[in-house]
Image (cartoon, rainbow, N blue to C red):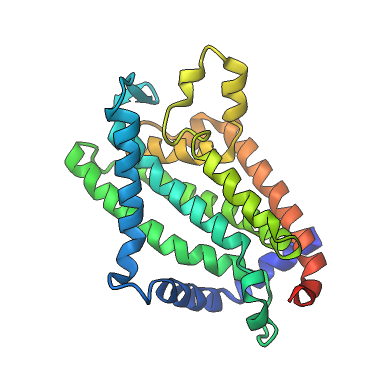
Length: 273
């Protein structure tokens, strides 16, 4: 608990630095491209069109539902895919955020726990922009602004907490054992097909145990929350309060674990140069 409070205190005290570094990270990542930061939107847009074509056009597909309401497959996919992009990029870049900056860290004087945070923040700006684009698209698709959109604030915060907790763990382990990053990359690519992003897990209703196990993935909770909000179906985090308790219990456990191993090993990170 003490280490967790230490990490939280470091984020609060250096929040201004996190925001400055995240903006620099976002600009520097795209400075050699002619289209610059536009690629942060172009790449996911190309991916979502490809997945829509493969999973919807090339084969017969049963209707998809959100909270019992039938919705178009493309809108259903769009509502979750950009959250997946935020998760994937935050987790992958967060996992290597410390060991790729060890030389810089040896010359700087700020807590290492802010490194994964500002990397996630740099992806967060892009996510907010893409979420705004999706909301505009949904207005033309007939899914207008409604009271349920307010829960997006909650799910964005929940997403950030989960991604930071995971990145604390993976960035520490990746610094000690570089193979962790490669393993994580492969695992996340597999998770795209197991998180309910591309196809509804309800298709496994005949295999109820397997379906329930797959729904324990905390990313599924966030995905469904986004869909419930954008389609204006219901207050997902309230009607599924048991899942909400499970999600936050898991996030707290991951954060406590991540804070503990990060604080324990960070004084030795420079030794891995």
